[in-house]
Length: 429
Ligand code: UD1
Image 1 (cartoon, protein in one colour):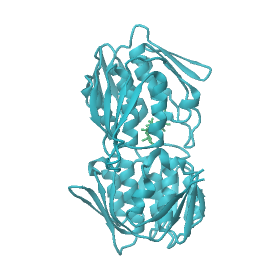
Image 2 (cartoon, protein in one colour; image 1 turned 135 degrees about the vertical axis):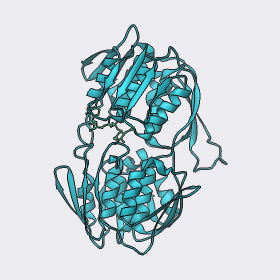
Image 3 (cartoon, helix red, strand yellow; image 1 turned 45 degrees about the vertical axis):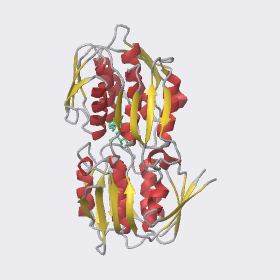
Image 4 (tube, helix red, strand yellow; image 1 turned 90 degrees about the vertical axis):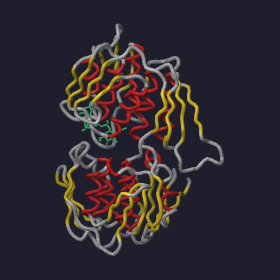
């Protein structure tokens, strides 16, 4: 297995291009199942999760063509992929695929809406606490699906097609909102989705579905209305920039000090996180190119933060923020309200010298003046990158093991950081 070696203590200066958002790319690719015409996605990041989803969709009969592989193509621009689900050859998504990437469960919605049936494995355990799919199933039932659980599979049927209905989520769910949107797009009649997720990736998917002929209004608010249509057609859509990657590099710069432009980043996608980064002592400015982050001289200030659905502080930046405030001049509190057990990074950060105590869903982080490099283990996607942030500011060498988690969500992490003066390299096994 690959490892990443980081020698800390270098400030970051330069430009980091921000890739297309992983969390929009995955549902957008899945939406290709809704039509027999090609869906062309631009600005797709090169990530392990995208490659895995290509294989999963291939299994259902989606033809995939990747453009932009020529040698003279800018290596930092995203790829363009053509997905064509002319014929769905299989409506089953097996356990060995769904268990490797939770979001692949969402294929249940387009398969059911277009083919009237889907058999999709339950996703199974996950490193960041129980992540049930009860609300996704509830949404499909409200649209008239018959659902049984058989031998670990969700077997969904709607032989006479789905029909519009009222879906009220008792809790904000991003996956539930994606599933409801995709299913309702091809249902007969009107669907109202109440307490919908307002995440920018939901709006991006709704925009793309509208380009494909869907009639969706209200995406980006907590009430979305979908007028079902009989058929969707092909479209071309460019994936929005990754706000989690943006926030991650912003925190890396706040951690090491320096001055970096996050190219293509859009501040409105992460206002709450940028406010927190400002409170922690960095300067944040919007520029024509993207977002400029700098910290020179001043130390890191402690923060009080609670994770919340969008537009609140994202759970996907919680681990990175915790890494940042391990070196604050005082005590910080970070409360995680979205996922229980999303604190695996705490033990690993402690190996670098961080002082963190956990009480229930709140971490108390007492800032220390120095961290020291050590061998650490990447446990999940966002936890792994928090270790990289801490290591960039630690004295000496940190070896991050199990880096495949990083490859799932961060495109060219080492190259982007090295170009700004970090000392980070991948050691292949
Ligand atoms: C998505 C993101 C993930 C992010 C999360 C929250 C993708 C590919 N993943 O995950 O990076 O951390 O949103 O912003 O976009 N829940 C239920 N029942 C359900 C579904 C969810 O109880 O049927 C709960 C979950 O356990 C969790 C909360 O709802 O406590 C939010 O989960 P959800 O928004 O659905 O997360 P994902 O869509 O899986």
